Length: 322
Image (cartoon, rainbow, N blue to C red; front, side, top):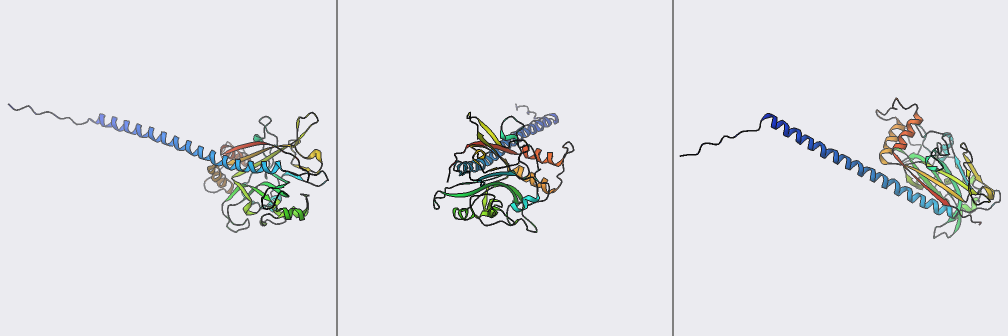
């Protein structure tokens, strides 16, 4: 007697639909986890990149400031200025035009007594001073050094008809010991003034105002700030720059004007932030200001604050008399 044939049954429509839903749900979960992991990796990479650049720049600035030179003879041995006039930045080698960094802003912080929340105008702080040249070939000789933010094409000249992408950067210019000696130790001397938008050669006095194209120290730095401190007879630190929220200049000619400490701040854009800001400043594509943001200045800062990291350091300055 043969066995009765077994009946086979296929999947019902409901079972197939349920399988599709489960598969789609699993795929969505995997996609969400993958996307989250990629975003975390990107944020970690951005933080590492900006932190590495900021650390290198702050280390070099700390080295220079800790070897600062000063003689209370009426000459300007250290100076810091915040420039809010676009035309005044032409001779600093800036690429003007488009929606640039807003001028003005409080040099004092709105977030307690820290420099991290302060804004240093259109230019950022233009800091220059005399220091000891630590170049092993030159020996420990006096040299003029400057730090400032520049806004330039990533390659080529400012005056090019079709310039490359424009980015912000922190520049450090160091004049050779020989040219510092021949130009003198007064940072307000004509030798340290640039009268052209073209970039001067490296290590020349004019590069104190207009850095050479090879003087870039850190890319995507959109703000650089300095608070300077003197010391009261009680030993307490007293801020001498900015002395008021609207103070934009400090030139140290006398001993009580020379700082004993400085708070330094760098605001560095992520790569994504730099690309987004470049599109906003040049008004490329479909980029437009959201209706809830009242003006372009607020828009600029909202994008920068969302896509940047701030780095702060206090530096002790030991005044040396040459």
